Image (tube, rainbow, N blue to C red; front, top):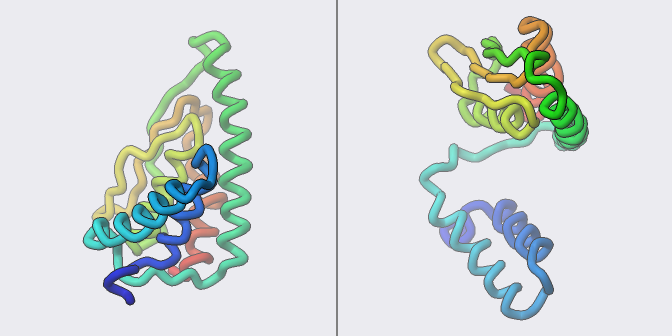
Length: 162
């Protein structure tokens, strides 16, 4: 069973997302969703780390809520910044020191930062333990770095106990 479905949770997620995004839940759409749900985890098996263990599902749900709220809020903020005078923008790079050793969790942190409009993770320097982030507008780099650590890194450490 593990060779055919190496990541059953991912397969269910793929199928669910396919059906939600499909125009109509027809038999054909269900079959395509099932095919993708089986094929994609098998084809990407080599890219996945070892077994991922969520230690605190409640913390994971809280983090998901924070990320979704931040995405909505950041969209509004970025829209206001982009539509305003360009000379008010202060783009810059942040060096966020990481307290995470796990490469999967560090990559997840970088992905969360990139999902939030106005920021994009540029590099995860594991040798120095630093996440490089470019932000559209940075008034206080230390405060922005501290916000990433408290809003995303600390909950990720709780979710994955790392």
